[in-house]
Length: 253
Image 1 (cartoon, one colour):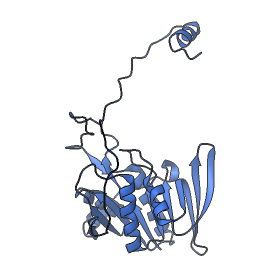
Image 2 (cartoon, rainbow, N blue to C red):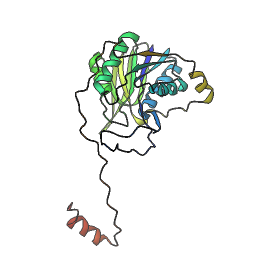
Image 3 (cartoon, helix red, strand yellow):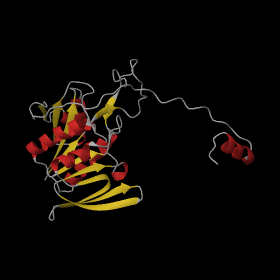
Image 4 (cartoon, rainbow, N blue to C red):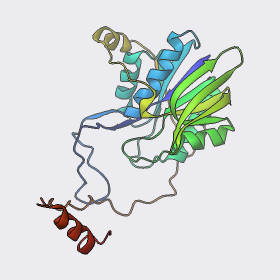
């Protein structure tokens, strides 16, 4: 079985985000970029499935500008067998539906038995691509996965989902789409030998036109603003003072 994993290039989680002076977006020039943390978890799970003998190949896929190749190289250094880069140069033109359409076209070409994505990206927090992709493919989906068990003989996947009330377990017929949550696993670090090996691994390039996918955005960003500054905290001296402030200033009791 082949597993396809979608990975996204985002501003590194440790970087302090700065809004552009014209307020059209966030500053990405001369900013450290890395693989989306949820995508790292998705890739790690695919690698563990392959290492258990339940899959034969892991293919990492990324959609975006030329710099996405660096993200794919990271995935290859972690252990993915090969990469696919769908290059789209226009900044800000990609949205979850467009990415889902591109991934659907790649699925039709690659015929994977399982698709794994991060549940969301830390830049836009949309949490939509996996669900949209499953809808386009008409495949079953298991989102917010905290545990995944595959049965190769029965061609099913058992997925524990994190929901508001606790854990929900769903049984999916393969092929299926799974999106990963934080507690699924701890991604591995790429070792230096694997980083060197990744340089010789194949990354196949496509454009949306090659896949007969038209990328357009139905959304327009009017303005991006920083959140308001938090007010300084106040140290109180007694319970009575706390109750007074909650009652008269915060008006919550």
